Length: 429
Picture 1 (cartoon, rainbow, N blue to C red):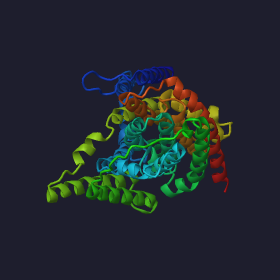
Picture 2 (tube, helix red, strand yellow):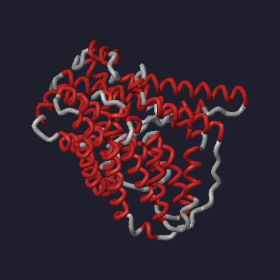
Picture 3 (tube, rainbow, N blue to C red):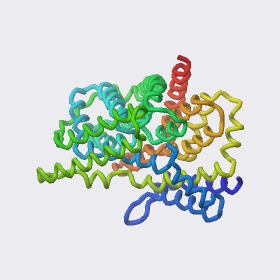
Picture 4 (tube, rainbow, N blue to C red):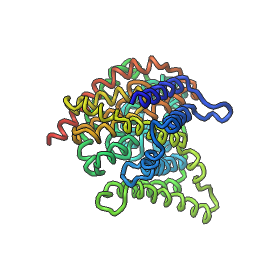
């Protein structure tokens, strides 16, 4: 048990350090943190802390929480969202809506928050962060206004309303599958925590940024280009995938199979479009833009957490937490632990704790909330935060780790409280 805890702890601390420093491999600029987790996973396997036979069983199991199935589901949904961005959809919608802002920053702020919230529900927080952040930096620079209120509005909206559907965050996917929660069942419970959390977060941000939002702006007119045929292909595939996932409980297919099917349909449709029109399909760029660096990171974290589970750490944690209220305990602890080890490994760890414990669905839903809202507390609480910080560096937007934490604490406390109250009400109905 001690060896597994030591290896996982050292690996996670190194990951945190690498993320804060923005460490990358020279020349190719590949982020270093996935390689650190891969090294940690190799060490637990070579030292026998986790036998190879156990790792093989984990990766080849037929259960819904098989890591490979979860990764297929996540990357398939990512492909659908990225393809829409390649067609210019997100930028087109943003530019069109921002034309109604006039000179009031408060209108821009509210409009952006609503837009990101809606798009996140049907795509994912990571994709929205990747596509909207560069646009916001450009827009604010041209309008000569501070980008911070809008970057926070985008980030908070993306990581709040990602709770609403299972597909909004890979942590939702894992925890739901681990607890055998269906798509519709999940939505019935999580709509109220998402709504209350979203209102609370918006209210706090309006107070924090009230002075900056009083200044007038003159937004620069920008043309919005949209490849309509490709947008239609992407939109139809994403819509059909979402509907199919919503009724997956009644279909003879698992969610990963449904998502993978529509990803294949997307790429085949895009290639067919190129063959018949001779125009760019966007398929290659979409494939290259899928966040593949998460593959070694997530797989390695599955191995590391399985090492903890195999050595009895998860069982000990479940016993320790069994005497407390699951909503408060798992909601608060998952939020804090996400900022120690990142939200994906935290979700894998807590999923194992939940499986050996007896807290029921309340603990699983509370952990879902923490895995999403934990992103507010520090930039390393979620993969969305890591990517967000990297983009800001590329855009020369100065925003320190401490500045993020100061504002994050102010936002996360009332938002987490509101979401957990919403969860209590949902489960009580």
